[in-house]
Length: 435
Image (cartoon, rainbow, N blue to C red):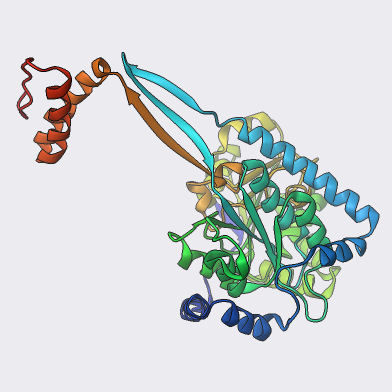
């Protein structure tokens, strides 16, 4: 049967999006021309903060003292998991070399970028996990300098738990500055910082737009939209757990889509009946976000069988994908488009968001069709090299000369000709395009 929408979104994640491009462009231009002073001006205006931009050792130590020991243990636990997973990822990238033809050796090197700028949101929520995810992976990758940047709160500064997380994960500098001005400061190398080679981490629409505009001058992890989550559930799934997981992701923001795809009408109806009460039980701000997200962006889709469910999921290419269905190995093999996959009710997106070890900086808005999330690989340049003996150069030079002339690139051909003439004087070579 065709997919049946038991609940259909009335808006998309792009609906009602304000045009922030000009605002962000103007701020970036102002800060690039005005330097430190202009960045501080915007910080005063938007962050309402006039303390130190770069935290001193004493300020870091004072912030750390404010973090309860149990929370420190939890942050350390999450850091260790993320670090170990990142180290395993790094081990998959190796320097290699191959003798392509006798006497011609080509190789690959993985070189980390020098400077990383890691943004951790700190507005409505203190995104401790974002500091862990971004700083840890940059450190494991081998970046020489890591700046952690987070919006300060008026009269408080950067949330102490974010300071602690950034510090233990390996940040070289911690910057109390948010929004476009924080992104600009890392990009342009203000306040004595090295210019960032890559910017990573989630943020609001202004941070996301700043990264998009600056992409090319610096690398970025991805162009991010509102977070989204999809659950695949069969008739054996626990409706209460499914509903709870949907609500847990809807609280991210008013425009955060959540989707349920199932082959069980009974399960779908149970879940839809439970969600409103679960949302009503949330704290006020979380409740407002989840209410809007469920009302305007959520969908519940009924499919005929698991193959149609999987196809539907791949079409959506969700940032987060949960499977609460039988035969998890089948789903792992079948599914192809997602940012991160959570198999079975024993795990959940919330684990990945906070502490299980996989990264929570993931592709949104269908980008999982073509890319994965943040990893050590994002900070590494995979570059190539080659060297050759004169004999090894010979057949490559001949082929290069003929292909170049066929393409009409005589200069390229002559760079091969001169080597053949020098290394093999007296030999005759047919280097015309016709061979």
